[in-house]
Figure (cartoon, rainbow, N blue to C red):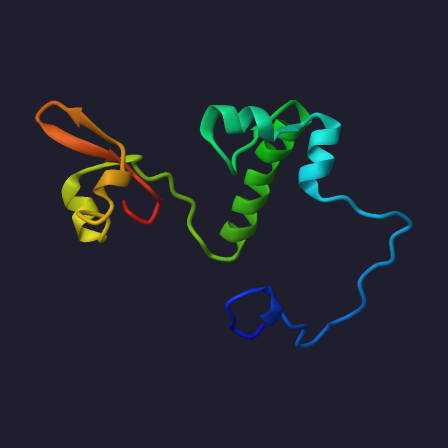
Length: 125
């Protein structure tokens, strides 16, 4: 795909195979999820703002089911599974370039005499 500033640059360069022919008009996941009652964007927007969803029932189960598939695939390709600490020191954030630039965007708490920050991504720890 060529680089570009907007969708007009999204040109098809090549195609491999043919897309399957469907006997129905597919729906976007955001429409289908609401119709099925498994995604609730309006409730999530009231709770957290735009771009969030509450997953109900089978939606929550589907989300949970995708995690082991993703992990198993990547582990089979040589990646290591890891759960890092979710709270890190200011020194860690300084070393990864998060502080001081993003201090206003981070969540901070105290553990005894030291401050700890909630990680923005797993790359930090």
